Length: 213
Length: 195
Image (cartoon, rainbow over all chains, first blue to last red; front, side):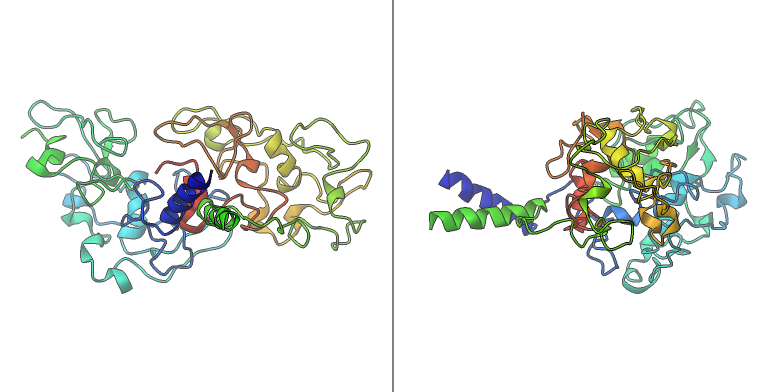
């Protein structure tokens, strides 16, 4: 009994002191903003709230971040070189762009009870030193999102596999569905691939999951 | 020394698990203490419980004394999570809470007292859940431990489902608002979610 208590205390202290990750992949990863000096020392609340979510703003589960309204300058002026229309970013891009386009403060989070403003956009303050995180609203120099992928021999295929639910087209990962930020990036699961990528960039495996080259 | 070690272990364990090791926390003086609100009584328990002639319709609400809601609820995800798990109507361990928090029944509708103060008339925006549950974490939804979800330790399931009382403890406000665990580092969320 005495030994059990001692072991329990040891394990508990270990967890309490953060010597081992108490939770899954988001804790301690870049999307864990609980220790970035914002008003909430929490993790989930930056994107999700258990009550009064902003689902009317953006149809994302228990959404609690103020949603970007763009507007965006589209890749290729709205047309790929193969003349595929590029639309406005879909909801599975807007969840990301609500921080990463720099129009809404990173800490502009909270339920519909209130109108969160936040203090710091992703091109300001502590984030200014990490310019790679700032996508902006000019998407002309970024891989297109909101663009449908149509399966075509020798050109495009449906992505398969990968972490965080796998690479996919939205909504159903079928031909004609669109590429969005979340096609390549999984917001919750920082992986060994970095940048929340779902598949490794070694050998450009991620790119070649859709592009037949 | 042995007793000291044991006590210390419990304190540390309590901190780690986000549960209070003290038993001092009580409903008295919390937002669930309506004894000073002029609701026709200076009692605390009476709003939900009566020692006699109680309603026995809710297994998770012993000696129930509050007016019961008959609201029709709009369910989260239209009755289904994105993973395809059915979301049912709120179970007993949610209905007790919603008897005030859906705001269809007045807070002071207890026993034979005809209430008049609905939650929506107070400046308690966040606490007013309403009958629209589409913007709230699902309740009445089965929890299956696996790769996505863990078996909760600090929170709890009712008949295998997540209900209001899974996260909230109506009687204790150690972790506001009446939470079973701390929200620091989202510990409460991660008690089930394996993110």
